[in-house]
Image 1: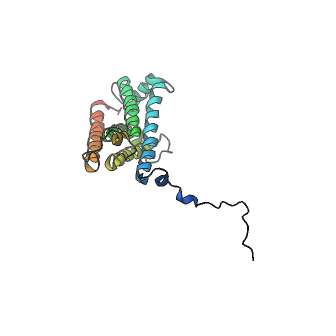
Image 2: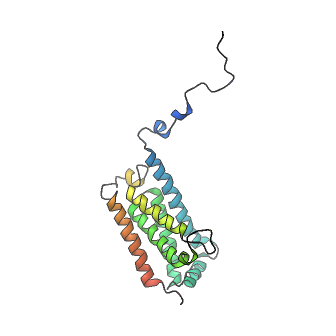
Image 3: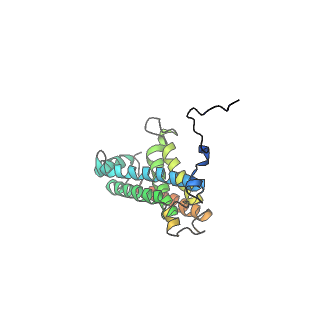
Length: 194
């Protein structure tokens, strides 16, 4: 009896063998995952900062909105928030000075959570947008600072990844500076109408 003939089905090696580890020997899945997370959240936050400057009403409109939330010196606050979001977001995406970039992200997101979103409940889809999304960004930033940026980062490429920045120290840098910066900014600048 003759063996069945191929009818055009793929006869080569299985596709599952072509993985990032095969294409890039030595790459670990965590490094690719950290790169994707850093790019998504870092670039996303940078775009929010860009929008504060160039979107809708520009910095003047952002300042008016900050003023309506109860922020003192709203024009200055608009510039500080936009600059922090752009700078921290791009540094985070690149994986450069990662614990400090994460601290900037945490700080600006916690201020946003407190000043703009906390009265609207948890869910982002609620009227006025809840605090779910901004706190998620802060938690992701803290988690990456704790784990480290991975090998696919400028910290790694420039040999800025030493044990002091990964693990608990990276976690403490991001957490203390981020939460502390948010508390300080709210204490000095937030005066909501009563």
